[in-house]
Length: 587
DNA sequence: GTAGCGGTAAACAATG
DNA sequence: ACATTGTTTACCGCTA
Image (cartoon, rainbow, N blue to C red; front, side):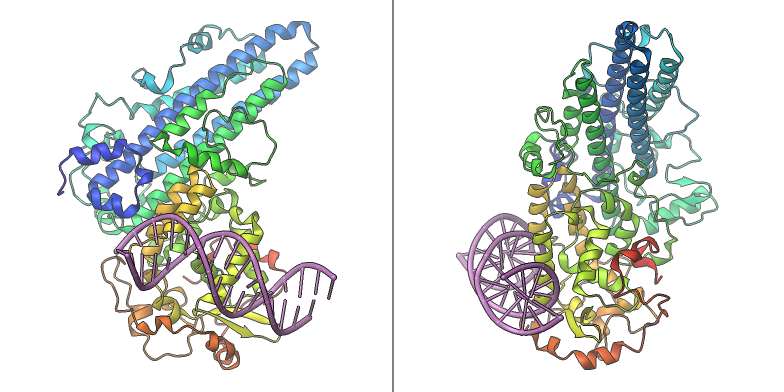
């Protein structure tokens, strides 16, 4: 509001990722922020789709070429190659559709499967500059063989999809005014009108986040009878607050991860083609969009350092300048696991759940498979791990296992993060070591945890830095999440919320739970800084931890949920299948 | 400039 | 002897 409209625009043109969330929020007013996010997405989408298109064109051309060349070859070999390529193509298409779905889910793209024909011509050439193949793609399309035929159909389908999806991202000049859709919170769309204008509001009676009578906001399935009610719901439940912003950013990250995955697959494709002595086409096309996505070239250095994360011996064509190639190499990163946002749809009842748990729930699959550093501090992760268990206690090893189970990122550099885990366990008073029959387990003292966490919007700079330096830019957005998640932690830390019925996490001392647990429920955690800044903070020696027994007694009696399986100490790896919504089981 | 925070590295001790 | 667990210290980078 305070800024004139130019500022945010220019900011948007820069790389927003370089700004801290605080900065972004300071610079941008809420609607601007939203618009900016949408804009980013639009850009990403645009470029990605160009890339998709080009890849397909190339692929198709190569198929054709190969077919011609293949006349002299044994048919079987040719068939195999074709098969492989078709698979690759399919994979790409799946990726793209995933991507589009994600965007659609976020409401940035209104993608009606039926309206598969749209103007695509206006695509900015800057992002594309194919100049070579498109015509072949169309012209050569004389289906000679069934295999090719199918490929072509797929290709056409895809193009159609891309078309529709792209149509909204028409170049800047257009400035379609169809944003009679003022932002959910009722504020005017400053940026929206000038460019992205996400056409998702074309149809008056619909909203991209509204469908089948329910809210399509990730993780929210609130039923709304009509659009009006939905709009109300949107304004109240999904206004621009930390939580929504964080979710939005998670979504961004998902998208980015998809892109990274795409680039990886493309690279593989290149390698395949290279191996088959087909034209070793330069990998430029995908380096560009990916680089452009973050919005700045300044990421090149970041991505370089990410190189350490692909020892997978894959063909790394010149890494295409700075293509943030594949920091993710989780073995089983199937396309299915990519639409991470989906699995954890829950009712909005537990909206006050911890950001971390909801984040984890919603992006469980994502973090599980993508080699992205989770945007949470070690302490919060440890706490989450512990709180997820029925009896709120874990051995060190189980904590380790939780980390590796939940986050692909923690499947490497084990020495480092394990050390950090131990360090955190020892350092923070909120983690209490309890001597158990079976050995030592770690529990969480919620009150301590509350104490050590002033409701500041600080994020964790170092975390951000490390994510940036240690990973690809895919982790960048995580930093935003980190900040946001951290900032709103006070919300979630309420054991009462997480586990209403039980003494939950080691809270024998009931006195004085005033400020902490129950209170911070006011829908927006950032606004009300609870009075928790006792200087006792500094008096941190570990003596508490040496008093395990009584504490344990207090807590022991109540495995409140009647843990069906005393799995806590059992084979740690076993639990992962049963619970897919970690933090939520208590809701 | 400083304090506080989080991450990382490392040394060390205790334990199994 | 070794690995694991746990504690502690030091340092760095960042933000408020």
